[in-house]
Length: 415
Image (cartoon, rainbow, N blue to C red):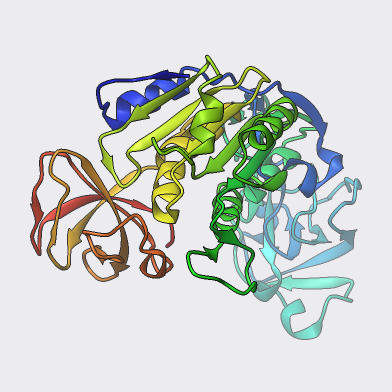
């Protein structure tokens, strides 16, 4: 493991990590495989419409397909010669003075050029089952007809490589005739938690022991990023045990996240294990919290992100460095979360010389306002206050104080 001597800014460290990321191999998945197989995957290729949308001219309303010229002298009685329901392939021939009942979505007969809505006919009162219907209003050509291709023409681009397959996008691509999609599914990510002081939730705690929460935190942050943790491992603070776990996880996963043990202390086993990894680099990043970072490519294959152990520091590190890299693995067009501007509802002390990444809660109104969820002087370990956080304020390194009413840049995680 190499070690940078000089502190680096956030962008430099993140760019260095992203440069090591190669997108996962794409795979072809049939749309008929269903929602679970494709939802949340990222397109690896552009997708064009295989046919026009709509496929054919069809009715926008329940009513009667008519020749508009026959309604010019409305009210007028027209002979009903049949019915075209949705899904029907019947194309009836209409003579002057004739019409057919038609349902929403059904194809318009070739001889018809308009639809008389049921509420504009005698059927609105007397019902559908008549041989003759009175059309009460003049119906202009094209009335209530959805034209073939008015939404998308055959060959139009429907979605781009790097876009996520949401429910709406999947539905649209299926409607456009996509049968197979080339996608990248979520990376396989392992969470490795170390720490001699950690105990499982519910266990009795002795002096110096604390509940282990980072496995929940990391798995939850992954889930909120559209990735389910493939493996969660708790490991004792033993160099050989940690090295063995890293070798196993690195060979079977795309990324390994660890929390804790990256400091300079004698008991920081993760740092000691990673010192033998030439593709991993330790860095001091000019942010608060989250200054100690250790990441890179394991010899066993996976990317490793060894994050600080304090929960807020780990969460900040995940948001700024891990999430963008995982999104790059999956081929997302945009790997960074967009930022917003908010007004500080209260003042707080900034971290002079380092970017301050402070958890905030939002106050909604005509202007988006934010306030710290934790005390600005003790961010990294303030688990209780962090539980209410809805995002982060990004205070630049040059600032020493945020005053009420100042505008700040924010990352917003929760609406």
